[in-house]
Length: 280
Ligand code: PLP
Image (cartoon, rainbow, N blue to C red; front, side):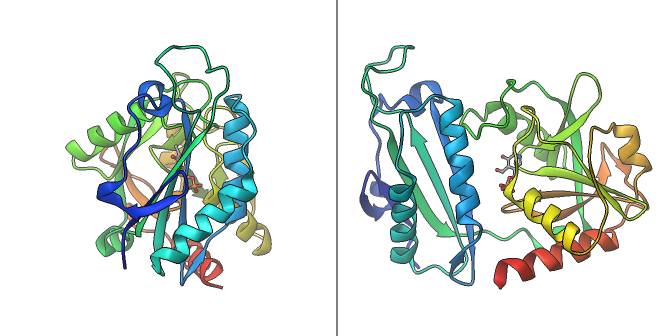
């Protein structure tokens, strides 16, 4: 199962893959990304990831990039890896140019990717649930665009790990619970699901979308609306959703229990249903 890298059409070992130092992704964070997972040899929801990639590029005024070519490149790299349960990281930068703030006159977007076996979350985390901390959301105002400018997320994740928690949840100045560092956030109250609406302050997670579809199929009521930490503590369950977190129960926040402090039944059911959908 080789771990492979892709740099503008060339596939090779990850250790040998390099990008020029004047790539704008490197100098300015002027790049967008996606992370796609496979289950049983098939890439899950690739088209949704490609659609989001297009939206992110449009949001940054990238020149047109052929999504058909990106799709072909992803499939080529994935086939070459032969990895059944893989994670593909894909990054598209605006291009390579002398370091200067204005966009290059004739930008040529650069595509780099890696493919490796996906690292599953530890079994104890799935069984016992995760502890999270809250941090004030100090990110920029376009968190709906999946750019590589992730320093606030990196800082918040490290703060969580340093305090013995799994992740950090961003809360706005006004007290609205938004999302975690690489996952969306849901609560369950009286059998109903609640999550932050799609605004410029959160990423439109693909897993979030799949869960909303599952909820609709299973006649589980959903409200996409703003909610506070107080409402989270009054809820029965909470969980994170994301490509690698899938559905990960949250049992404590800042050391205080959510619901009875145990993994809840709806979180467990949604995890199982998501896995089933991904493996079909
Ligand atoms: N929110 C943020 C900030 C993320 O970085 C991610 C994924 O990387 C998500 C939510 C979840 O998105 P998805 O379900 O598409 O993985």
